[in-house]
Each structure stands twice: as C-alpha cells, then as structure tokens.
Length: 109
Length: 218
Image (cartoon, rainbow over all chains, first blue to last red; front, side):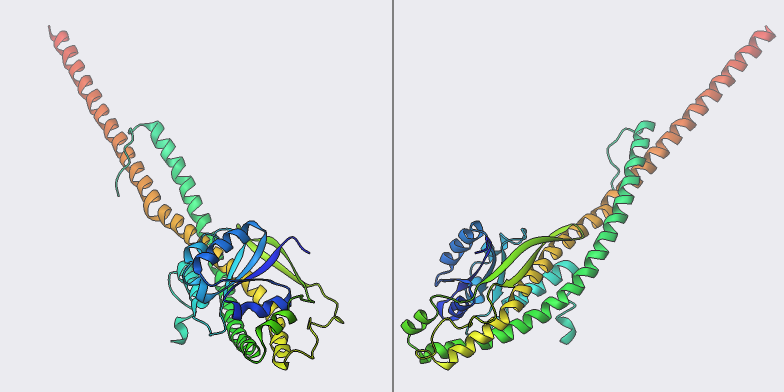
C-alpha cells in the first residue's frame, strides 16, 4: 500500500462505485461532517480527494483552505444527479482571477 | 503623485536614484514573469476546461449506470460484492515547478496484473449493470486523476498571477512615479540652493569691492 491515498467523499449512492477501483470511499450526508472529514484526511496523507458538488457547495471555505498548498488536491465531481456546474465555475474563477477577463467561456456565448 | 518626506540632500538623492534603479529592474523582471505565467496559464486552462467537460459528461453517465445497478440489486448484495476490491491504484504525488510556483504532479499507476479480473465478485449473484458501471468507472479514473492535478495547477497559477500583477502595478503606478517625483524635487531643491548660494557670493563680492574702492579713495 502506498503512503499516499486517494479518497472520494460524497453521498453514498454516487461514490460507492469507486470502491471497486481501490479508492477509499467516505459516504457523508452532512456538509459539516464532510468538512471535518477533509481536515482529517488531509492530515492522513490523502493526496487526492474527490468531492461531490452537492456536498462541496456548502463547504467552500473548507476547500479554499487547501487551495494554497499543492496537496491535498480537492477536485469536485458531479454526483449521480448530474453536474451542478460548480467544477466548471471553479475553472472560470481561475481564468477571471488570472486574466481579468473570461476568455474561455465568453467565446461561445 | 506625492513627494516622499525626505531631506533634500545629496546623500538622499543618491540613495533614491539607486532605489529607482532597483525598482525599474524589478518591474521589468516581474512583468516578464507575469507574461510568461499568463501564457502558460492560458495553455493549461484550455486543456483543463476540455478535460473537465469530458470527465463530467462521462462520470455523470457512469454514475447513472451505477444508480441503475443499485435499483436492480439489493444493497446488501451490492455492498458485499464490492467489499474487497481486487484492484488497487497507486498514486505517487510529487511537486513540479512552473515559474516558481510549486504545483502538484500526480503519477498514477494501476497496481494490478492484467489477468486479475477487475470484478471482485462472482457473476452469479450480481447484475450485468454492475459490470458495465465498473468498467466505465475504471476507464474514467485516469482522466479524473489527470484533471485533479491540472485543475489544482491552474488554480495555483491563477493565484500567483494575481499576486504578481499586483506587484507589477504597485511598482509601475506607485513606487516608480513616487521615486521619480522625489528625485526631481531634490534635484530642483539642490539647484535652487546652489543658485541662492551663488547670488549671495556675488553680492558679498560686490560689497567687498565697494569697500575696497571706498578705502582707496580715502
């Protein structure tokens, strides 16, 4: 087992499938629970955490706390109800921050 | 632009000129750094967007498949089926460096022999939907890991670009004009003093000559 691990956090039905692939699966229902979990997993050498958008939307400040360090990488994924567009919004925020204008999303209207 | 509160002396002038030199040089360097970072960022973020759209689309579909699986199988059977994964993925996180920004690099390796079945269960008790869902999921995982690294890199690069841009602007619009203004002020003040001094000397000389002339006549 490697020292660094990958984890998936989200609602049980959406993330259970990742268990088969060898990822650690952490079903949560409450945002606060997820926030605590993220802090714990960050200390436990989890390098990559996938987090479903429906949980992520309520714990943005927890996610932002890890934005300045390379690890853990927290990546938003859609859950089984479909994408909320939060992940793409994050990309857009980066673009706006870096360039001042949105060049990627504006060009297609 | 406000003049700094300094003593208009020659020493201060030399000091300020040196500071201006450093500021101009720093401004040029930071500007170059910013331009290069922006170039890299634009490249990366385009990929990032494409990758994310791809991952989201595929993942949504895969998760829907999985939902179907849950619908046709009882929870107990499903959980039992996937309790012991036969596959194990290993990631090796390290850090890379883009223009001085420390970014995550994730290497991904599947730690399973090809001949081990990706399905950790027997087919007799499980539904075919589960097999399909797992197959798609395992195809998406490498993309997800790539996305994770790339997205974080973009995000960190964006932060650094913003910081650098602030520094460039502070130098360009505040520090450098202020220094130039102050240098001009000191130069003018020194020139003015010089002129005042010279006038005084000329006046003294005139007075002395007048005195001399008066003495000779007497």
